[in-house]
Image (cartoon, each protein chain N blue to C red):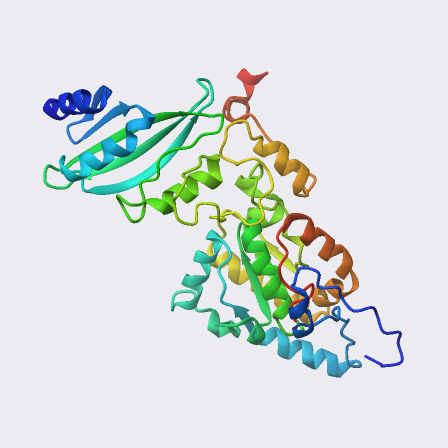
Length: 209
Length: 177
């Protein structure tokens, strides 16, 4: 990112107490500028072949991630492995329904992940609310709050479906279409407004980097 | 067990003893005597274990029915002690001094139904919800669907079928016409 662009106004971080505001990031995320031609292709190939997923089960669907780690389905042969913290991960698997309480943690974890980052949303709950369509505390569409690269349908999807979803994500990344991070930076205000509409007790920085 | 029913009736005015199973019974007491009843059952009756405590919104009668599930391990018998409290300004004696875990259930009931338990530790803190600003959501006059529609964005294209009509059409297409 070149420095001659106009510097945007710092984020207000109004959810934090005044004495803590200086401790956190007050800059909105910026778009990633891809390298030129074949170099970016090489980067994308490398990214797609080492998908490190954030080991954070956000809903019941996360139970389907466990079989993937064992010998029967063995996701490691596709270059997929779980990581313990958002900083080390490149893929966030939203494991089914997301309550408002979990959504807060999802947003926080997603923003802490290093770019380029991708999101797989599994289960019908992430798509249209699924069986929680009338719940007072469960969001209906995860793509209103963080960008989603690919969905895996089912309630729940089988481990095979998850592997197929990861293969689909690889194709998206290799084609250079894994643009979730940039989409988030471009529409940051819209995402933030949606998040703050449902997360009523916003007591964290506006951008959790 | 009828001996216990009589004792409870004489001491605390308990009524409506009902044997659900050989090892499960229920009884109704007055809300003002609920704490004394539970204390006596624990100390004298052998019902030393509080399995859970919860509430039921009987909106038709304008009351919350509180349910305390006790267990007598020596006899292998469970007893559900019910008590009714008015839906307007409900306030009930705390049992956290009888059973240490009682305050957790009471905090839950405070958040979900709005039943107050004065003196119960941390009863006013949030339990499972964060930043909830509506009426307690387990009250039956809370409209979950309306709140969900107003708060969360819906993805267009979702359809609902009546299960009976849908299966009839699928299995017996001639009859459906």
